Length: 101
Image (tube, rainbow, N blue to C red):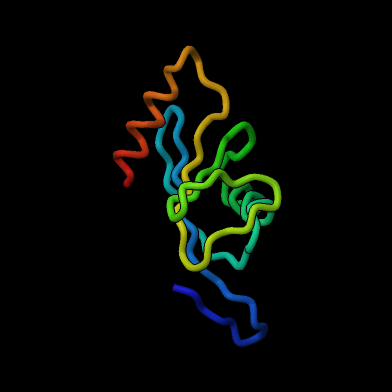
């Protein structure tokens, strides 16, 4: 759901981030971020580790990096380690995405 604040015209929305790794972590935040760079900082402020992680938008299945523009409305983001150990993390990532979808 997109909300307009009374003080300014910036739209806010809910972003739900799932982080894989040793433990799957789910965090939801309200944000007016429009790019991955902005959202990444807000996720870090909420205690979500984003360094060394790849981000994928569930809505359009695109990798988010740099100043990638975020999809409209509420979104889900999957965060997965960029580096894998002998393909082990690829299996974990695949299972995580299937579980959360």
